[in-house]
Amino acid sequence: MRIDILTLFPGMFDGVLGSSILKRAIDKGFLEVFTHDIRDYSNDRHRRVDDYPFGGGAGMVMMVEPIARCIEHLKGQRNYDAIIMTAPDGEAFNQHKANQLSMFNNIMILCGHYKGIDERVREMFITEEVSIGDYVLSGGELAAMVMTDAIARIIPGVISDGASALSDSFQDNLLSAPVYTRPSDYNGHKVPEVLLSGNDRLISEWRYEQQLSRTRERRPDLLENE
Image (cartoon, rainbow, N blue to C red; front, side, top):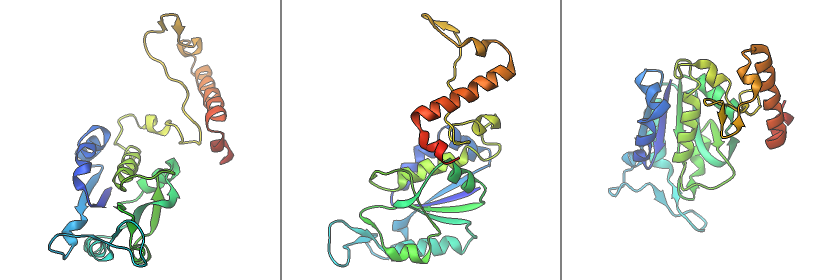
């Protein structure tokens, strides 16, 4: 899978892409991630990519021309299954969306910044708009990192124990059950006996009941989506 990220701050991705599961996915050849500096596509001698909004108002707007040049350059090299823009008014990003995107071969993510992006970029190029939450970030880079991580970890082969990813929270609209490891008794706080029983059926039933009760208590909205 290949992810191309269009950003004003490509350096922000160095640490994320060079660590943990994303690094492992890239090193194993399951994932390619390329960042593209939108400023490189500006014709302005100062590499300017923003301007004042028509009609007045606070803030600056990302210009259509540099973004269009970058997108057209990349589209000239390959076909994209999705061209995504991070936006506060986009579709809520969730596990179902991550699963869907992980099935694609090539996706592009455009990171918003400043007051927003010239609307003509949406009209001309964007196929999907995605938000990671109802709050404001300084830019779409953090959202792109979140999406890339969530997508990469469920690509087959990225995580050695594939069953682990499939049993994560939200995969079945349920939160995960509590987990424990050694010691079985820490200062009187004991691991539930069923987990020490060796009875796979009872353990599975216990975990499912814990998932249901935890989801009802903490995220009942997930059960409404069933």
